[in-house]
Structures are given as C-alpha cells and as structure tokens.
Amino acid sequence: MILGNARLRGETGPETGPVWLRIEGGVIGAIGQGAAPAGPGDPALDLGGALVLPGFCDSHLHLFAGGVSLSEVNLGAIHSTGELEQALRQAARDLPAGAMLCGYGANYDVMGEGRPDRHRLDAITGARPVYIVATDYHCAWANTAALKRAGVLRGGPAGADVVIGADGLATGELREFAAMGLVRRLAPSGGREALGLSGAEPEGVSQAERDRDIAALKAAMAQCAALGITTAVNMDGTLYQADLFEELARQDALPIRVSLPMTLVPGMDAARRAALLARAASADVGLLSFGRVKMFMDGVFDTWTAFRTDDYPDRPGFRGHPLFGPEEFARNCIEADAAGLSIATHAVGDGAVRATLDGYEAAARANGRRDARHRVEHVDMLHPDDLARFAGLGVIASMQPVHPPGSSGLPLEPTVSIMGRGRWGDTFPWRALQAAGAVLAFGTDWPVSPLSPWNALQSALTRRVWAAGVPDQRLGFDAVLAAYAEGGAHALFSETLRGRVAVGMQADLVALGGFDEAALVAGAVPQVGLVMVAGRVVAGGLAKGGDYDQGRLA
Image (cartoon, rainbow, N blue to C red):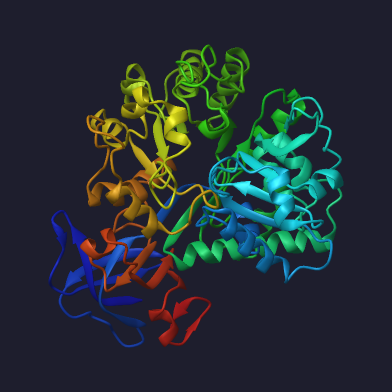
C-alpha cells in the first residue's frame, strides 16, 4: 500500500512538502518526497496533506471496565445535586424496573459541597438500587436499596471498608475494591469487569455472560482504534481475561495491540501466584502480548488510602498504609523478575513509590541487574530523594496527564487540600523525572479518565500550577507525543519496532486531518483520517471512502 500526500512531524514541526510512505508486509518499507510512486496494482490512498504520527500507546488503561462503562452513565461533568438528579432520572427511564442503575466518573463534588451518602442519593433515586463509581475508581457510593440488596447496610466482612456512620449503619461510601465489589456484583455486568483490580476470578460464568464480556472488550478496542490508539496496556489481567483475549487473538479479531499484565495481590497463595506468573510468561498470540505482572502498593489521596512519607495535613500521625508488606512485595518482585517478567506497580503516594522502588532494588540484588523495564504507575507524589532512582534503576514512570486536579474537568478540591500545600511541588513531576533521565510512558487510566489521547495531550500542555512558587511540570508538545508513542513502545521492549514513523518500523500509524498544534492546545480535536495497525486499516474517515477487504484498502 502507498500512503501519499502526507506530512511527517520533524524535530521542528510538520514538513511542508508532500511525503509518501510505502507499507510492505505491515512495515514501513520506504518514505520519500513528492508524488507517490504507486505501480500497477499497488493500492494507494491520498491522505490529502494529513499529518502522519506513530499510533498512540495508552500505557495504562482498563479495557474490560472501559467497555462496560460505555453502557453506564458518565458523571464526569456533574458538580451539583440538581445535575446528578437529572442525569440519574433520565438514565433510569431506559432501565427495567428494579434493575441497578450504574454511573461512573463521579467527582467527589458530584453533589456539590460534601461527599455523597445514601440519604442524599435516596432523595433522588428512591427504591431503585444505584451504584456510582468515583472518578478514581477507588471509591463508590450506593443508595440504601443497593446496600440492602447487597446485604451490607450494617457493614461488610473483614477487609472491606464499608464506611459506617454514627447510627451504626453504612453511610453509602465504599472505599477500595473489596468494599466496592460487594455491591458492584449486582450490576448488569455482574461486576466481572472489576475483578482484575482485586486479583479475583469470576465463577460460574454462563456462555451468555461470556459473550457479553467479549462484546464489551470488542467495544473498548473499537473505541481505542477510532481515537488513534494502536497499543493498549490493559492493567488488570486475570486468567479469565487472558482466555478471552487469547480467543480473540487466535481469531485475528483484535483490531489493536493489547498487552495484558497478570494481577498479583497481597496474601495470594503460592499456587495461585504460580499460575499467574506462568500465564504472564505465555508467548505472544498475534497482537496479544504478556510478559508482565501488575501489583497495587496503595490507593488514592481522596480516600486517604495513598501511602505517603509524611502525615496527611488533616490527620496528624497518619500516613496511610502500604497494601504489601516489604517482605511479601520483595518476594513477588524477585519471583517475577527471576522469570524474566516486567513488573508494573500502582503507587500514588510518595511512600508507595519509595516502597515500590525498594522492591525493584531487592529483585536486582537477588537476581542480578538486567534491562527489566519495571514500571511505577501514576506517581502522583514523589519525594525528591527518590527522583534519581528511576533512571538509576532503569524504572519507567508510567503516568497520566489527565490526573492532576484541575485537568480534564477534575476539580481541585478535595484532592489538593488532602495532599497538603507543602507537597504541591512534589506532585505529578513529569518534567523533573524527564530531566533526571527517566523514561516517561503516558496513558489515560480509562475509564478513570477520558480515553481520548487528544484530551490527554491538551491536558498535558495546559496544566497550570496551583500556586506561585510551585514548579511548572509541563513538557513541550513533542516530548508529550514521545511519551505517548516512543515511551510506551520502550516500556514494552518495542522501541525498535514502534513509536516512530521511520523506515523499518511497523506500520502502526494515525493520520490527522486539519491538525493544528495551537488549536489542539485551545481544545480543538483533529480529524482522525486513518488508523493503521501492522499495515491494516482499522479505523478512520479516509478509509471509509474506499473499498477495502479485511481492513486493507484495495
């Protein structure tokens, strides 16, 4: 295939003259200036001056949960009780009587001032069970009907943080995965999409439920492809998900590349841990890859479950707690590293980041130093003493430019106050990490945040400091693009194959019509004209104008 009349972004921006690319066997075989040299029978597509970029690698998202969220109520833009009432009542009209209504993306000010509780939700929803997931996916709120149906109105089992009020009954706030899952399992999806976060496997899945889950995964991948995301790192792998993705991969039904880490959780028995490590060591199947594991070291700031090196400003003497003890975490790191696997660990607070780096150091001491490309996910807060450890250990900072409060529609409060004014300079330190030699890999954490890479790019470029004297952590446009492409490819050991538009690289490409950097910063969204994965057209308006068979223009 010949892609003609294209622009490529150079070191100083898009070139002015037309460029053509020859795609051969899924690889960029040649790039040249001028008119495209299509021979007889060569499929050719005129890109009309579109800018061609490497396909985006979303280095941290949740495809299963994202696919399910497409049929739920998006509450991300709501900041008052009146708006919430309107959204929930409108959504309830389309549901059968008694069915649970599920919403996601709710900010902590979704009902204005004060956190939601079951009484405030009851006033809107009445007898219909309602379950709303917070924007960070580490907290949820349920009304009385949902709590009763789940049997947790008087509290949950040990280890499940069902918040209890002064009256001895649940307030409706459910913190972290164990508590959330008690109600989430009653959702139309059965809650299977969230099990990967807690390392659990679904039981007794019917064929109809399995088909529904596959449909959710397909819908999620289609969303990625339409936005120019050609690689997705799906951060909540289970044996069940691995089977679903492998089935699709063997059918050549994956439109994009998917990397699937297996989730290890605290207290996991040796047999279960061994099964997950063995699955993580599976060979690639088509566009599906394994090769890594995922762990959680802490939670999030808004529920005071992020683990930090100093006290929370409003809770003297309290710093949060790590989910793993140092010995268990080091053992898991050593085992995974010895098996040749890469490790990704969720660490939001600076105490969690430090504990994670300590575990990676323990693996290097035990097994010998290697190019492991372990990762720390999120890094919302980083102690200055740990800044140089990323480059020193070869650890990748997998971060999300949509996460800083004030970005992508997120309110500043309560997060910035919970973090504390004295620590604002240590938060989301993109520029500091890059300057210290760390590799950055950007993503969205969808459905925690919107999936669109354009929204993420705009958020990265327009991030504002929260007060005078706080360092500006923004990166330049090309550095942000690199974190979304080259950085993601590097994290997957694929930097010689993907992440750049160059001869010999795999043809994972996105062509943008009407692209303008200044307009993007102002919030405009470019037209995705063509999305290609391994030389196969998978999405884009330009492709719809021609006849093509199995994704290849003809």
